[in-house]
Length: 191
Image 1 (cartoon, helix red, strand yellow):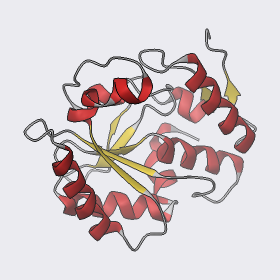
Image 2 (cartoon, one colour):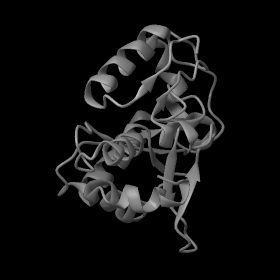
Image 3 (tube, helix red, strand yellow):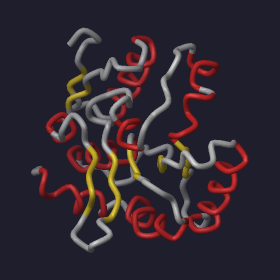
């Protein structure tokens, strides 16, 4: 699989394709579809599985520093549900501009405020899942945010991005993924 094939691989997943095509109607600033849904669609293709096999949710992130209130994020989630509610999938919508307000309480690790959606993606747990995509507004394929590149994603390599994730969370994710996608090469925490 080549990096040029990313859009074709992702669009083979009908839910992911629908999310890509419709999220722009929600009116989100600085948004991406990313993380597990992107990586796992690629892994499914490499394993010969159905493109949407074992994907538990589709993460849509956006960055709106003008309103960091929980109510605003809920309202955006409701708009997304109205736009994407017919899909047989769980869609998680997160304003990365407010993650620092709850992250330490939930995960026990302090977090400086993000400056953009791209800044947030650069802290996601693994190099292969630190990928976000959205349609290019100029009609030229996808805008791809991949701060660590796409080599680990296409190489089926799971490597910790130790910027934020804890060793325990990394190991739990890696074990779960390896059980589902056995051709993955899971690197040790230190690797």
